[in-house]
Image (cartoon, rainbow, N blue to C red; front, side, top):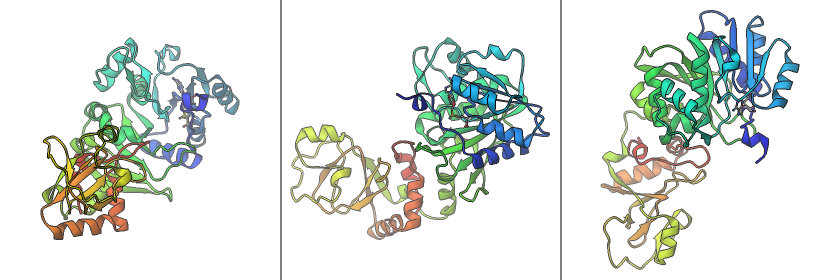
Length: 385
Ligand SMILES: C[S@@+](CC[C@H](N)C(=O)[O-])C[C@H]1O[C@@H](n2cnc3c(N)ncnc32)[C@H](O)[C@@H]1O
């Protein structure tokens, strides 16, 4: 694996750095006297901070020796440390910071040792076993919280999977229950070269939570901040993405899919179905309409029948793709949902909606995941049309 991938070396573009620093400074009472970045890379974020607050004392850490040399060359005033920020930060001594800026490596395979286990539990209420693996971003957040002064601020870039993925629900609960989240900002588009990652910025104050709703915003293509409104913490524990909430709000007076249809997910994988050597429907043969009916109906198997809607559950390009099935009863794979409507008129309206540009965009907006996009059953049941 090359160094860029192994260390998650994808640097924050200038326009985003500028906006992120500006928004962080707006949340502080006065310009920060000291700040730190724990995975500073080539220093795009701290260079911007230097421009906006010239007198700020800035510390920077990076594991990569080449980066630390670059950082020192870039600004002789930076206090630069070549160190692993996932280990105890004793080299910082007693120093604490009013501002932390972060775009940590997006890595999912950090080995949990005793130290990491302790800080995950202390700062995020997360229970990980020594020897298991954890996302680097969780550990970075704990490390920042340990060196930021009370009432100080952390502005940190995080990937979509942490903001909306089901696997990060416990992390979101731990964060929202223990710390004051000032705002959650989605970055429209993908400003990071060579990564597929959709990103968000969390603005976390090192203080106990004091409100039940949090401001959800988006930095759009024009670099303008759009404010959606305040969303309740309980909903944010499920997911925190602007795209999802804007979809639910725009259509809040309309129909919820689960009130009009029964949704079931296929049970067996494509591999299992292939081995059974009998007809089945999968994302690759959605348009096939077999004439032969299934002989024996088994419990615990999901079938589709003539007139049902079949929808792709996973796949970056095809997620949400739907057809009205016109063949005989057939088993569907676990990459598909079967949607059985109670009334044909409503089915037609649903199909017309999800095949319109805005409907398709709304459906795609409920998908989660970074590399491969997927729609959860719960989100599909709550889909409004
Ligand atoms: C996504 S880049 C971000 C760089 C910079 N923050 C920016 O926004 O441009 C992540 C950086 O983390 C560094 N890194 C990876 N693992 C690290 C670790 N365990 N401790 C400190 N730095 C690390 C990489 O060398 C890389 O420079």
